[in-house]
Amino acid sequence: MRQHLRNTGSAVLALLAVVTVCTAQEANPLLRVDVRRVQISLGFAGQQILICGQVPPGTNQVVTVIEAPPAGEVRLMRKGRRGPFWLGVAQYAVGNIPALYKVSISCPGGNVVRPCPDQSILASVNRRLALDALVVGPQAIIRRANVRVLRGTWSVKDRARLFDGLWELEASQELYSIDPNGIHLTKDGRYFCKSVIPAHAPEAKYTITAYFLNSQSLLDAARVELFVSRSGIVAMLARLARRHAYIYGAVTVLIALAAGWLVGVLFHRRRRSPA
Image (cartoon, rainbow, N blue to C red; front, side, top):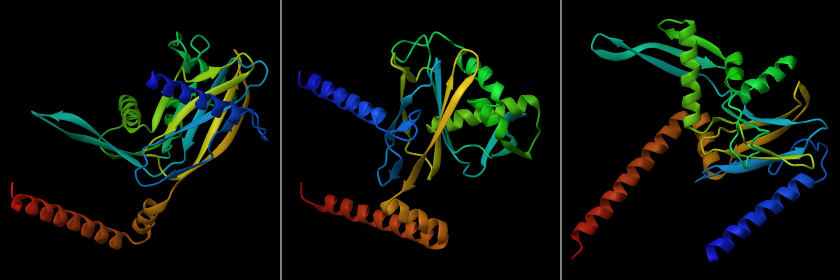
């Protein structure tokens, strides 16, 4: 009973938060976010954000994209069989790809509360976005990526395998995702979407874009910025690593040695203590 009351209270608080954010008077009613700055501190395990707004007349589908700017190249290796052994036979460096990329789509037949019956919903969205030279999902990553072949061959088959592996790698760290039934549309013309900035999120200025579509084409779009930054000791260590790499390396070695010495002392005292 007590647990049920706690769950009910949490749900009520969440609903009040949604109402407060999505009814606030702002310059852009199409797209609102409950937080505009995420602080990464010691012990940061991710933060949920709420995206919502008012849809333009005629909208029957909404797509949101959270994106962080590129943060350097990602190196991937392809293994192959050489005689009785599996070895690295090709290596690629992929650049100009978002450091974080999360897509949510509203499914007219599911609307979050039921499973989405449309298995080709992403392709349907991209057909309409293509009229404005836009695309979302894995194809957006492929379109903008720069690939350098460091070793091995490069073919159409290699290309498909490379980007499948890249998406799988980033998704395993919760940095890339597609939720085909992640946006709820209400009868009064509002939409709500929840997403998570994961623990591995890079420090950067993110963009959150909402696309509003009808059954034929894109009607409108809106964009806001989200700032993800480090704070406290995490920020201090990051600055030290960036500006004074040798000092940072020495400090980390000293911390490791001190921790090892302390554990050894405590273990030795515990063994000598009488039973």
